[in-house]
Length: 275
Image 1 (cartoon, rainbow, N blue to C red):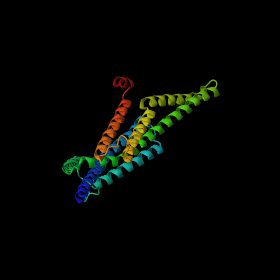
Image 2: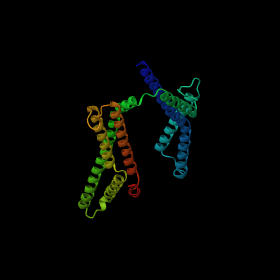
Image 3: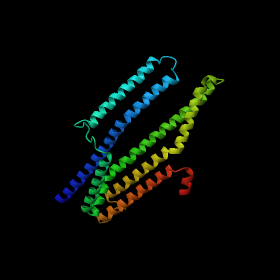
Image 4: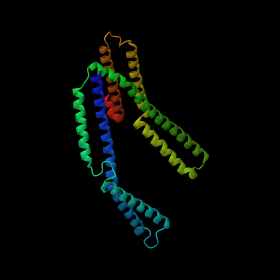
């Protein structure tokens, strides 16, 4: 029991270290981009200010509002660059990984992941234990699938309502204005909205994605319930046999879901070739 607990603690500690390094890499990249991107943004802003003066207000004074906007932006960028430079090059540095190259953190992450793989391989539990652990992780997978399904259903519902309202508004505005010259702008916007929504719905197909995700989640939950109750096809006398069959079935369902997602991401002609 203590050996199993020790193995779990070691693997959890490795996972925490990996996630911590990933977060440090993200933060360090943001720091570097901000440090070197701020002077570039400042230069671009000064060039834009000078360009407006040269090409628009060369013979007259630049409006006070324009000068105020660009002057304020310049002051903010200068202050931001000074603060970042002090945080990066100060002694001691204010940033957690200040002066640390990103490639060094990436290398450290690779070494930690390799150590995690070797340690996991050395401490690999029996297949029955892994299959039992796999079963315990499935509720989170079902929740994720249903969450994504709900997300795509909401997108589809929003698209449909926008399409309904825009289509109805085109007819209403056309009937209200005769001739429709005063409402040409409204008609153009509504027609553009209908075209964009129709094209987006046909390309991304959120309704089909929501249906596929919900179907996969329901199938996985159905098999999980059958395994828990010990009913067909998981009514074998040996638990190991039931767990093996369960893991195989769920992985097949997930593979089918990935295949359907790939087919939805392909153009219509490509889908017909795949089918």
